[in-house]
Amino acid sequence: MDKKRKKVARAPLNPGDKRGENNTRRCPLLSPRKETKNVAWIPHDPASPKEEFTELITQNLRSEGFDEISSRIVGVLFIETEEMSLEEISIETGYSLSAVSTAMKSLSQFHIVRRFQKPGSKKAFFFLDKNLVSISAQALRMKYDSVILPSKKMLPDIIEKYEQERLERSRRELEIITHYYRQILKLESIVGDFLDEMENIVHQEE
Image (cartoon, rainbow, N blue to C red):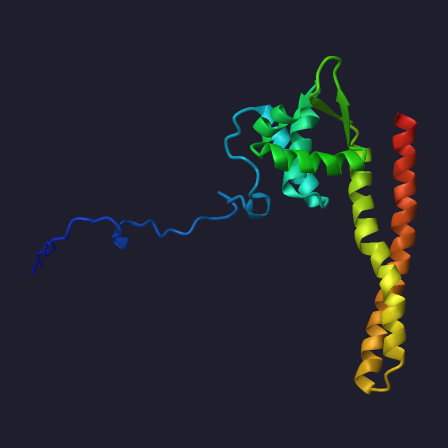
């Protein structure tokens, strides 16, 4: 006896209805998915290769320890073939004139940016020394001066205070701090030698 198939009336699909989803698992070998979570700053649709390069320089400097505004300024100046005024830098970076002025003073101290005035003008103009070794050396110098040297100076006093205590807990903590101090001394030697080498390369290229 033939069995008649029953027609089941299905309700139309509505937005958010999971019946419309494709749950078929994709084979990673046939259609791998690219993960870019660690490079989220990469522009998906850069307006121009110039802007893409500027963003690359900015993010590289952020990774080396520069703050956001200084990194952005260097990124803008790096691609420019001519000097720029404070007003022009402010427009290109989107930061206020006062914020740019403060950042330029800091960058000028590290000899990354050269400041000068044109004849007959009171405006300050800036030009970036496009030497990657020089910029990297200055970034490393900032870390050397702000982290390694202060730690080297403060740790002996901390160790001496620990040595005056007689507690077992203090003895174990002292071992950790003493080990850290030895690492700082080694790091000072390694980074100091590397900085000297980098600065020698900069002087040779001048």
